[in-house]
Image 1 (spheres, helix red, strand yellow):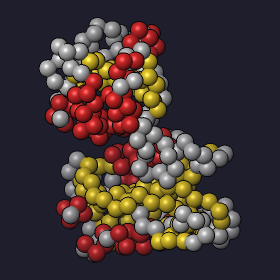
Image 2 (cartoon, helix red, strand yellow; image 1 turned 30 degrees about the vertical axis):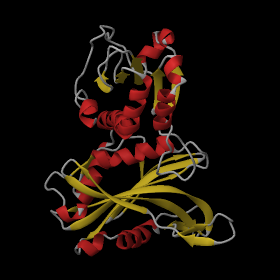
Image 3 (tube, one colour; image 1 turned 180 degrees about the horizontal axis):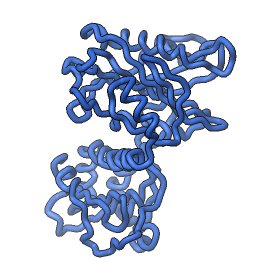
Image 4 (tube, one colour; image 1 turned 180 degrees about the vertical axis):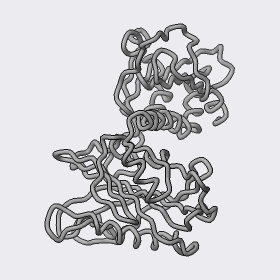
Length: 342
């Protein structure tokens, strides 16, 4: 049950007495150690847990797992493995009355999420995981997100913070490895450029004219207006939103529509759109995720549009970094219009 998982989420724990000053968590983002005996790993329990942790990242068109799982035996759980950032312990014993998932933090290192999955037998734990797998994934995602937020708060760009406050009325701390590309009175483009990749986002605003401003069609039209200001590598090229993709034969094109859903972050309602971007007059593209809300103080629609160009398969971590940016946005003076979440 969700209450079982969440109940311990805010409890910092040193119950095992192993955490000492200087024990910094190891491992890469979205990397996960599963400590599980072979008897459980080779059963339906292991199959179910593996399916939960290796499900595809929904925002990507090519398969990537939500986590990179490293399974080890209990007798190998020592030294550096105990200091990993994300740990799942599987414990099956008849003495447990019923299946449960316990979440603790900073048990053997910091920052760390330490999850124990326990139950009386393989079958009941597998069933429990099948019913609560999404909550398990969400807990680990929240831990990764909080790490990004903590980093941004410590290493943010003061000039960008001030620019976004003055331009959009938002309090947003951007990690200082991102750099300003262009700015205007209604749009700011920021990115981190690499030899073979571009990890960026643009924030824009325009008048809110009622619920019609928040339909999928209106948001896509607005995105294309502002994305056209982002130049491509070739003269006359610029970013556009993909509206058709090749069918299974590769010979014909069919309409493509971004995914549209409403979410709430704290008291702020947002619209999340997940789709694909392309470059007009150039062969280049990738995934994008946008977040739109309404600033009640100014009666303006504000969109954070995150895009990624990385012509390799491993896009998950870079995309997640961008998605976490929306959790760094605060509206100091107001909450958004409630209608944005309806």
